[in-house]
Length: 467
Image 1 (cartoon, one colour):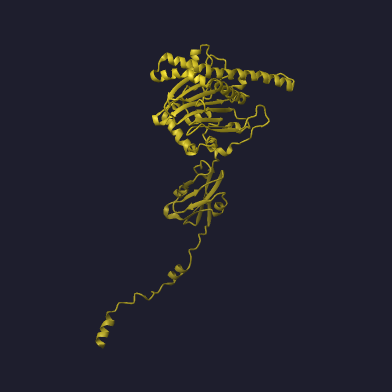
Image 2: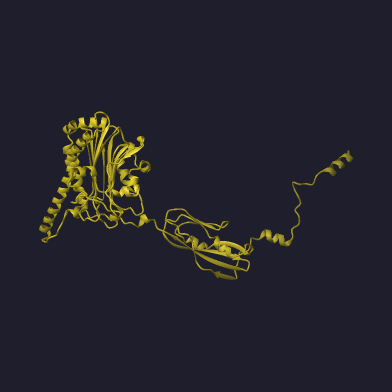
């Protein structure tokens, strides 16, 4: 038994669970127990400031590399790389440093110029200091002022307006208008105006929008007079008897598109829409004369005011749901902006007119002009240029817009008749405006949406929809 026991003892492996530690040299023990000594430079070497790519705007993520400084050294020369912690902590925003990639990350909420020092330590016991300058550009929107217009000024008008009309089941009118940033910057009033009406007896909607000329000192009143007078006149004209008289022509035109019937319908619409616009023009002229008289009475001095001081565009659309179930829509249009019957289910948009443009951006025609371009002496020419009508089975929306919306959203006259562009426009709009709610919150959301940012487009914005 003793011999067997000895044999087993001889075959046992070494005690791997409790190994005997090997002896360490004095140098190895010192290295293991002591932290790495900090780098103490004998010499500081400053370098010229390098410019980092600008952070284009506050409130966005920014990332860039500082590794350009490392190219001045061979890899084996570099002992360490870091940034100046004192300057880092003094930043008005958090600056993150990735030493492995020599990159910085930040999300600046404050504009300005900021300096970041990169330290590159080399084997010659030198610390090279590379200053980097980061410029954070301000958000352009924050540079605009919003100065309220004078509520007691001549022809004072609210800086924004909105409306919502319920027109029965799954049919509504919503409108909103807001002062442009260019006016808000100087505390000037809103020049746009709009108005709408729904007649439940005739199933008829009237939508009217006007854009007062920014160069005309009383255009805010001109647009207001134009919309109010036009509504008054159109509403008085499109009575149940009017539609009853027109209905046979509508039936015939819908079936055959007969040319003579078309002229008969145009003639009837001319008496309603063109006459309403003309009456608005007359009333604006009357107001300019009365204002002149008031000024003389109030200030005891003469000041000449003309309709040109009240210059405004005008778009009038009438849309009636016929007993047959389809819709008849007619539009009279002077000036720029846009109007369209948006029918994505049919893959089309019907734009009822051509915007008036000029040789240069911003040029247009105005209701208040006496020119033959606006008011030709021949009624047929006026109808051909400015009056349109059509019939449709259905629509997603009938939309009226001033150029504060059409310029940034459609940009060109060709885009205004592009259904693809309208699809893009509508897709962006419905993300922000809950049309399905059919209450006043839709008007609130539309007004808010019209504060969208578009560089170089800061005019008043007005939009109306029958949907």
